[in-house]
Length: 337
Image (tube, rainbow, N blue to C red):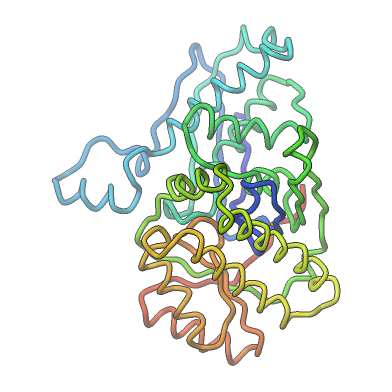
């Protein structure tokens, strides 16, 4: 059996400007992960996950609860799209000979609730890529892998996505990323940072799902049309990451707190409350009610919070989150790859 895993991620600063040739700081989140397994077989087959791809229900109530918790599409479509794009890559780079004789059965597992904007889809895609690379013994350079994952999402599945998730899942750890070079056909810049530079962070999430793939559509069109509010907003979001890199290196945690709040306020202004969502706004407001800095960890469903006043403030944050029905856990950074 060939196994590969991938962690989810937290966007600390800069997102969503990563999808608009901006800058971002992100970390690989060890709290949650997924695993993909391949076993030799006589054909290429996909094994449904017993919860995420459930097709038989004991009642309509069971169906309703399952769909509310896990959504409708499961993970099999991600695995299929990845396998298809992996073959296309091999064919393009004249590696398809490695894929002709060997077949496999593929399955997956994940310990994260669905649709929290923590890059669960791209993590599962990247774990699949890694398993396929190992199983077939092909060489896909590290710098090509984020683009391959992004192509699965955008070209095969029509998911609006930026570069940040795919880059941090390939590199791991804590990274500063500059995507400006991609606008002229160049390369992105990824600079690993020492995770010890991070202040203590907390992840807060809600049970209600968020369809993160849908939230960029109108903003993206406005950005393509040159709308000054969106263009300038994305530039300012990117500046949060640029200034945040310096603040981390200087140990200026009050500045980090200020930038986190500014980053969320910019996003809220650009996207509007209807897109941000009531539950997401409430998570941020609950964190800020005890003086914590707070912003989206991704595209909604989970937020990252920082308590600049220390331990007692973190206790207050934990209590406030729990009292309002949210989950909370300290952020654990996964090691660099």
